[in-house]
Structures are given as structure tokens and as C-alpha cells.
Image (cartoon, rainbow, N blue to C red; front, side, top):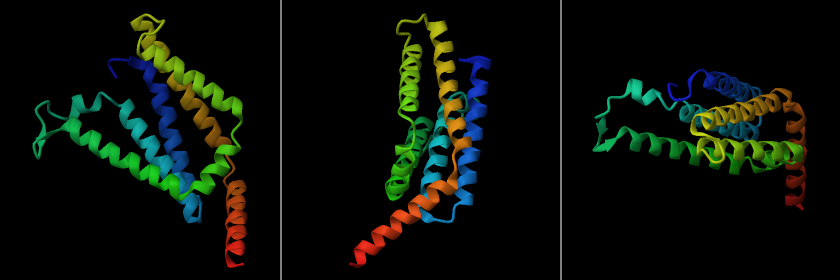
Length: 178
């Protein structure tokens, strides 16, 4: 946190609330495909939180840490890669629900998040921004993206999508029997 200071705190709070909201949806749902989707969302938010807490290893892990001849960084990257792959597998498993959710997101929201991601990248890499100002731009863009995610999650109606998925799966089962 020393690198970005206090400006990172609102983003972290938003990420934790997003993680909790996804956990709530995972617990509320009784359909395995939907639970898999929300578990994938929990895993994604977990990995984003871990990446945002980039100062933790410096505080908690000795610099000469080694386990089975590999450094902490190697282990962290390996574990996070496995988590990413599990999340990707869960999203593939819940592809019908994923598609139902994605197709109902307004195109303008995709455009806004894409623009913010580009601005975040530009700030992080000091493209068209002074390095110190770039860090502020990066954190503000990230916080805006997290705020959009939380707003979307908060307004999300789980019941609407559950019924949509149940109808789709029933339709596929009827046509598979014919």
C-alpha cells in the first residue's frame, strides 16, 4: 500500500463487498450451473484482491523464502494460475448462465469499462501521464471499475436469471428426448 497510499483503500473496500455479494449469490442459488458461475466470480474477485494487496508478501514473507527450491513468487504465481484455470473451467461449465448474464449487460457499460481499463493501463505505464500522476489515474480508474462492478452486482436480480436458465435447460432436455 505504500506505493499507492490511501487512494487504494476505496478500491479494496469495493472489491471485498463485490466478493461478499458474489458469495451471497452463490449461497442463495440452488442450481449447480449458477453456483458454479458465482463461485468463479468469487475466485476472480479473490485473485484481484490478492493482486491489489501487492505489499502483503513484503510484510509477511521473508525475502529468502524457499519451498521445494522455489521462491514465494513462483508459488504465488502457480497457485493463482490454478485458481484462474478453475474459474475458467467453472465459467465453461456455467456457459449458458454466463451468456444469459453477459447478453443483458448494456453495451455502454462494456464501452465505459473498456475505456477505464485503457486509462488505467495508460496511468500504470505513464503513457501520456507523469509517473506520479499516472499512479493516481491508475487507482482512480480501477476504483471506478470496481464501483461499476459493485453497482451491477447490487442491482442484479438472481431470480430473473435462474428462471431464464431453468427454461433454457428444460427446452434443451425436451429436444434431446425427441
